[in-house]
Length: 127
Image (cartoon, rainbow, N blue to C red; front, top):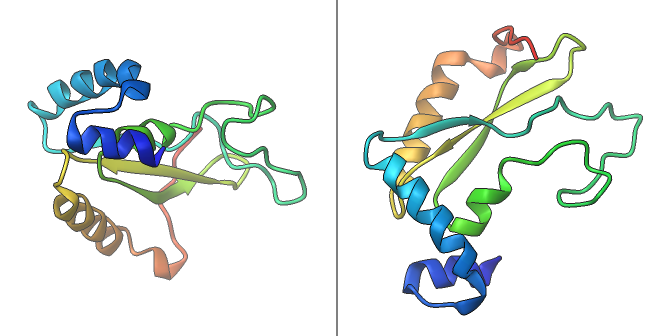
């Protein structure tokens, strides 16, 4: 994945040709908005008693939506955002334009200050 991120920054890298289309599409969206707010996964977390599949394994129940931004090299930050009906954690991710890491981190910091995770009280999100 580091190869694709490097290719993204330099504009080279024949192994990353399929990703160039994806990167262009995401950049087009980011021309119209400052940040993307997306889930980190399509499913709730795996209970601790169960063996969780690793990202990309065939046994994985749903795609980990963070992988796309690992490949593109766009700045992204994953944050907790609530609990499922089963009491399992849910996550969100903020994604910004290339080299706008500061905006992503500032938005994440503001979110954490507003939600106050340290109190143990989180918003209710139904998954």
